[in-house]
Amino acid sequence: MTGGQLSQVPVSSYLTELPQRFLSNPTEIPTDLTTSQSDQRHRWDQNQALVYISTEDSTMVSAYRDAMRQWNQTGVFQFIETDDASLAQIEAGVYVDSQVSAAGETESQTNLLTNRLNKAKVGLNAHYLSNPYYGYSYERVVNTAAHELGHAIGLDHTNEESVMQPAGSFYSIQARDIEVVRQLYQDQ
Image (cartoon, rainbow, N blue to C red):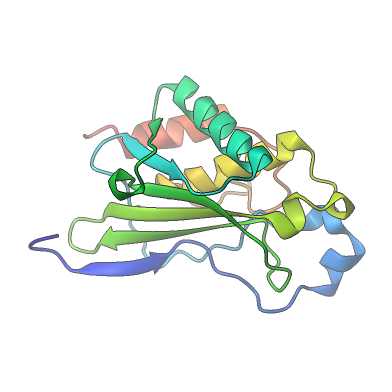
C-alpha cells in the first residue's frame, strides 16, 4: 500500500494456559480473547469483502458459509466467497490448539494512517468446537464464525446481548450488531 504504514494488528490474542475454571465448566470457553490496540475502529473501504475458506472440514466450511449468509441477510455488510486465495481480503480457516482458551481468533492488517483494513485472517479452534466434551452445537459453531467475521469487519467485544459477546457463543447476530455495523460504514 503506498503512502501508508502497514501494521499487523492482532484483533484476538490468547492466554498461554487454559484457566482451571474452563476445565471445570467447558461451556464457558471464551469465543476469543481480544485486545484492542486502537481507540479508533478499523473497517474496510466498503461494506463488503472477498472471503477465501481455507479449510476442507465440511462442518467448518458450512459454519462459515452460514455465518456469511447471516451477515449478508442483514444488508449492512456483504461477504463474497472466492475460490482464489490471492483475491481474498479475508481468509477463513481452522486450527487446533488446546493451549489457548479461545474457540476462535482474528488477526487483521490495518493501514495505520487511514485506519482501513487491508487483510484479515479468521480461525475457528476445532479443539473446542469439534470436541463433544465442550458442548458446542452446530448453531454455536456458526455463532462463533459470525463472531470472528464480526471482528474481521471491525466490531469489538461487548457485554450486551450480541454475537460479539466475548464468551459462550450463545447469541447470533442481533439488532445491536446490525446498527453498529451500519454506523461504522455509514460514511462510505
